[in-house]
Length: 152
Length: 152
DNA sequence: TACATAAATTAGCCGTGTCTAACTTTGCAA
DNA sequence: TTGCAAAGTTAGACACGGCTAATTTATGTA
Ligand SMILES: [Mn+2]
Ligand SMILES: [Mn+2]
Ligand SMILES: [Mn+2]
Ligand SMILES: [Mn+2]
Image (cartoon, rainbow over all chains, first blue to last red; front, side, top):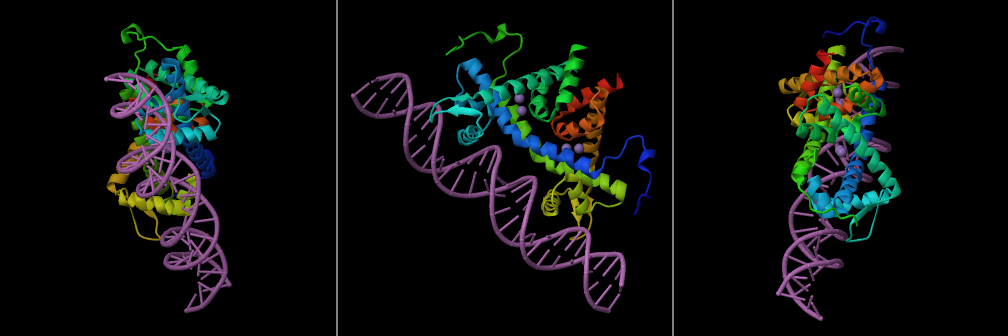
């Protein structure tokens, strides 16, 4: 059975996390997943507006690697969330709130990529990993990335 | 409109990613999300078996911060995936494959946490961020984390 | 041994994010 | 000016991973 005896938590170097603390961590990850779609979309929309003057669903779909109906549905969710403004059959634009979110996301994305590059990760891998990692980096960790970067 | 003129890609320092490369990155993130549930479960099950001798759904649920029916459903998915073995109403155990996955996940989790700690991130934040980040760290990036750690 | 309580399961619901097929709208080129 | 191809939307399906309410099973205690 290998049932461990009751032992004093304090005798360990690495404190065991309480079940509650652990659950809290998983809850935060689940929460991050809920914002992920919005973050990736507004970030991409901002990039498209910058590089092409407008963000068209067909381009969003191509770069996200999803089909156009998926974009239509998600854009409409973003509109409901107040992040996006648009008229039917036309290009998509960001609201003030959407722009603010996009700016924050782009900054965070850039920092994560730059940090991975500074570690010697190659460009393609850095970009790919950053696309997922960015959504799980707390302000504190982001600050640590930045600091480590400037101290390089 | 600020429509950008056509310009040579090569004149830029940071190469623009092709839409295909970008789409590939998002596809990899979506794929990672599909393995995430399995990874977190087998990792936790392995920890519970180690520290308590067995992994009971009630404990899995408590530490994951979800309700018992969610655990029942997901455990049954893991069984279908060949990661878990168990009899109804009894504790959960890992198959060979499940143990292998759990070991890989625990190792990756430990490396990510240790790396964040080495950056000066505090323990709670390191654990919380690692819980999400771990699923998006490629072998290459993980190796970079490790290397940077030993060089500390 | 019986039964109360805890643990686990089942049934059925929901929102998210993806898809295909079918349609509407737009806008360009003849 | 009109008609066709491309873009966009709608409708409807599906898997996932959450939930609650109700039921079933296991178990320790009286
Ligand atoms: Mn992303
Ligand atoms: Mn990004
Ligand atoms: Mn995790
Ligand atoms: Mn983990």
